[in-house]
Length: 431
Picture 1 (cartoon, rainbow, N blue to C red):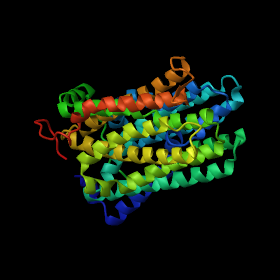
Picture 2 (cartoon, rainbow, N blue to C red):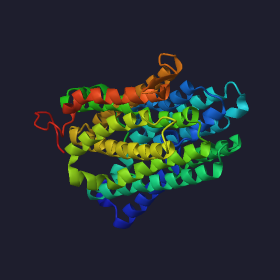
Picture 3 (cartoon, rainbow, N blue to C red):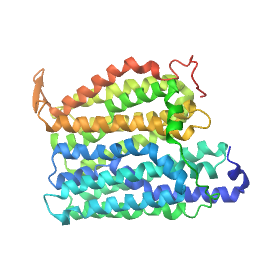
Picture 4 (cartoon, rainbow, N blue to C red):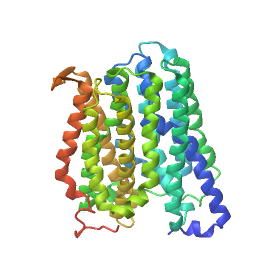
């Protein structure tokens, strides 16, 4: 329950929801550009970064989130969510502007400066996440949450997917460096808009309070079902997190497609997210949460396996990869939404903030480790640059796809850690 939301009129809550939407619409470009778009990867390739460094850049934000999600909740309690959003927006904007101006700092250090920007941006994400939840919790009634979050995710993926797809058509096969710099710079400026609209939301006076991380973390650790589910999510994220960015690098440096084609294909992946978020509720009602989560796991096995067979000699390979990327992000959208749903179901009353931060931290550990391991495999020469099966050439990119598929299959041994698969437990579970 939110007593403050109950004290607001319908018009005030509607206005505050509009401010929250606008805040996300401006701030989401920075999140989506790093996670789902090819812009940063193509920018690094233009700066002659190695495949290892390009792949590593996709995991740096996850590394920061891995360490900061839990402390960020304490920072919000101490200084208030609005101030944290201001700090987060400033850090995120600075990070993107730093990346945009990296080429002016010299050819050799430029790729590393871009990676530093990715790392700095990773600081802003957990701060924003920790501050966003109490803000939205204050202005929404429980009955308004489902419609709000459903429209929010659907709308910002429609917005970013459309813009990035148009950018793909405009940029051409070999776009000039200044065009990508401009796109990154504008994204950095838009990141400040997140605070501009959040500042317009009137919140109850913040009461500074001590946050006992040890006590709340101890409660989370004793929640056995939550810990088991977090471990499952960690391992499955490790298996799949590298797939989408690795596919974009494979298109660029393995199949040698033009930058415009790669950006358009990355937009098809955003389209998968749009459909996944939009249809999630209907799919859950049709299949049930248990069957959906099992289907997601098998999708995580089959999607990288399909990419393994997408060699350069395969007819219409770009179309097939586009379909697989769409399917991959569709599955990922269902995965993160189901993950959020189960995390709230497993959280103990009075410890929701820490329990959610605990499970999200495990997800970030899997994401960061998966992408970092893929980066190391590309760069240290462990994998053969090419080999053959049935006289078909296979690159090291395809080998990593096969390894990810095999590891996701291995993770089937943890499937009973999903609470919906084996709900007859004595632990707290309130779906």
